[in-house]
Amino acid sequence: MADKKTGFDRFEEEVLEDILSAPDEEILEEVREAGEDPEAYAARMREWLKMAKAEAGKKRLSQARQELEFDRQKIPSNITKRQVPSAVKRIDRFIPDTLAARLDKGDQSERDKKFEDEDLNDLSNDDAWKNDKDI
Image (tube, rainbow, N blue to C red):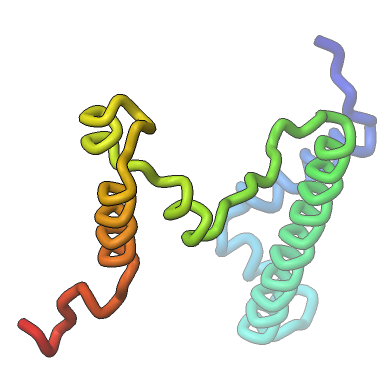
């Protein structure tokens, strides 16, 4: 696989590696030689690192969002919104299997239809169910 890094990228990595591998005492000595207060320098570096991490995180998030949007446009979606019938429509379509099996699915007398309607009304009636006060 070909290396896609530029000379500057490799240089940047080397400098970063040198900084990260340097002993703390060596860094403190360089700060003192430059005439700076090590505590102030450390506080400045901590603040810089905090901002750099936040900026890098924002860049990664932005890149991820761009990739997601690209994928959404490129790949067709197989997700569709499903139409959910209302509860009333479901009750209207409900035919109890026991009654339908007994009556050969549809050969109901008027009396059976009346009792079925009463049973369905009882099932959908909120007052038919016990609440906390009934227990």
